Image (cartoon, rainbow, N blue to C red; front, side, top):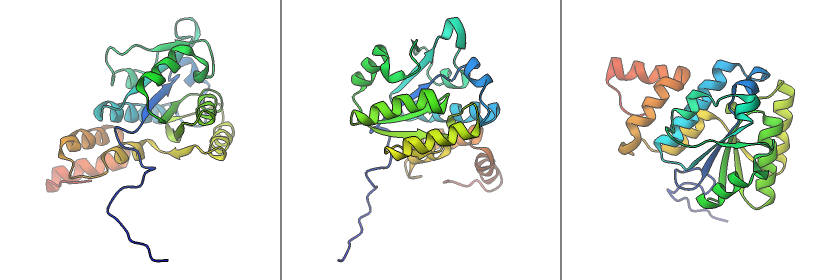
Length: 217
């Protein structure tokens, strides 16, 4: 069998217009017991994906659990990317069981969903398994999720992968949306986000631009 390659992206790659992002329970009380990832990295990665989604105009749902009575406010790193956007507060641990969230999912109308939030084994597993069962594609940004232990986080990721969820990382999410440095309309925004949230990669961009006036990733 002879294959003929074509210069087109694979259908499983994310683009700004082929998915919605659901950010779940990035809240103070939830983060206190999170031990699979340190709080600084978690907040950084949550901010990275929020800024990426806002920059590329990805439809995004922000949801909290018991915000006023128990879990506290959502991370400012997340909410600052979507000024004025209402948070959908729930009583259910499984986001997919909340009527207001599902109403928004249906209004957006994307068959591909990307998830990030706390905790992986409860508030991410629940909606991911539920969405997949109803025919949606689900991606999980694993380093923007956290749990009470490394064991809990890893077993939750494995469980979701077993039913078809696709894992990815926060920086991968940003760069997959950009994908081509010739896309000049989002070049400055993407590299700007990477400078702030991209760790050593962001430092490399700052160095290259400062020392050599470099362009590209």
